[in-house]
Length: 97
Image (cartoon, rainbow, N blue to C red; front, side, top):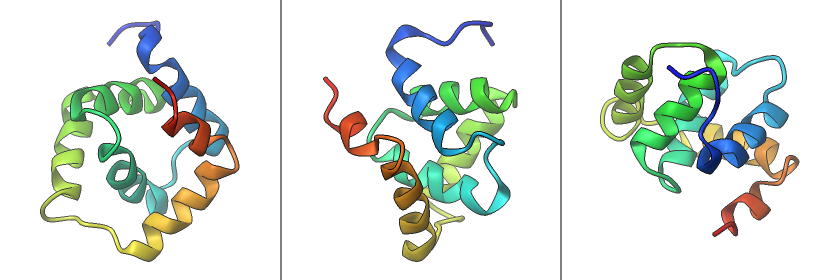
């Protein structure tokens, strides 16, 4: 893993950092992956989350695959995370080129 986040992932990293300044808690982790995986590639999401959490990229990528199949979070949990993201500029992030 690089010591510097890729330029094209910087806004995603900043969004996550603002939303989870103390780190991504267990309750929010899978809902966050489920929400963001629909907006970006699995690999870019895994790279960003791995950089932020200092966890292994491959483990994150497997977790992203899991939220699509075996560990699908509830709509309520996803909406809770979405509300937090909105307070940190999620709408603007969605509208980026």
